Image (cartoon, rainbow, N blue to C red; front, side, top):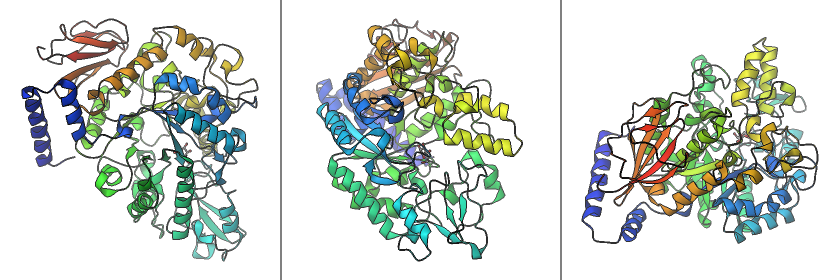
Length: 600
Ligand code: GLC
């Protein structure tokens, strides 16, 4: 991606740093500090973000739905993890067509979740424990039950009409735009009241806001300031590249349509002409007033466009998370179908190495394998059979905590929770799964194939209630859970894992401490080793003469690795088997981190 001159410059700079650090007489900690300083240290670069999906975390009032009081009752658990930041999925008033991603009032708490007083005590409780709170900013669209939309749809001359995108029917049908959750797949809905279509990239219950209207933007910035003044520490920005649109709505070419699930719609859907003007304006009106963090859900963002969002001198956002990694292995033209035969590790390594290079000099990356839109990471990227679930889950956590990027970790993955794999559509609650099922059904498609694919990739797999203990309903609720609980809760749960020193949970905590104690894991240079090895992901991290080696076997068989380093004398910092790997080979799903001393 980078021009040759940049690569040369980068290598030369790294080389100079290692020579200097060898010659220096400074104490190692001093040297580390000075060099890390040159990496432009920031709290959000050094943080581990833990994502709480409130609907599924803990239900305090027995209605089967998680809530804020539930989270409050688990603050000490959150503290015990050692994480720095909570990203809370939307908790605002919502009719819940898309579990809170359809907001009907941005300044009110959803009834199911509690009250503003509950929110204030949650924020307080987190801050008392030195944990920051990042909220979800969902401003590409609102709910159709938001007052703005009610006004907007009421007449063509209503002052709120231009808060949304309308296409008057006398102009003919608007050019196709996808509506992700709609049975007919269309992103336009006809509204007979004013004889016009309105735009919705997701469901018809989620009309897209019109960012081209300065009044709408002012309202959004005022709302963001309202939450910052309450003391929150940042925003995760839902599908933020979609906010700006080419309002001429040009016809999408067939070629682009064919790439439907390959992200080819970027030009038509995302990154509209004024996107970066709006992000700069948002930074100026809101973000730069606070010591906060911002992270874009980077739908459609590529290594080529990433810098436009996160370079510091552009004054837009801090970080983004891309979709390239989690989309790896999808069959083109199919809805979230994973190619048979497991992951192609060489492709996986190249992809994450490419993204590391992008931010090696400027900007800052994120790393994740799971969230509320993804299946459980151990099912998708590891191996959730009883034999390998724990080991492979620990191995993946090792990957996430040893890359040069801010880790975003989804609640429950620290327990090694895996996909529930529903057999029938009736078990699903997610608008995406249900909408797609009906779409395939209407088109006479293969429903069996779809349901099989969903066992691996459906979002509800990640949304099953959090597993606290082996009492009824995993200790999540005394009522009827809104989504079925994974039956393995009797053995995979916090209570059991807290007591077991070898559990996923205790490994997670140990690894997190290791990341905190070794700044090299945050800022150190990343080098991919043994790059064509199809089974093992090996890399080093280096900072000021400190060098760590990370070895990850991504397979269920023993695997050999050739890093060119003799690890027999190296110091083993952690291993998911609890004991050292032999020099050049790894056990199934083994993960090991070594400190390489200068003699190696
Ligand atoms: C984002 C959210 C997802 C939601 C969609 C529409 O991708 O993460 O959960 O369904 O936006 O708001």
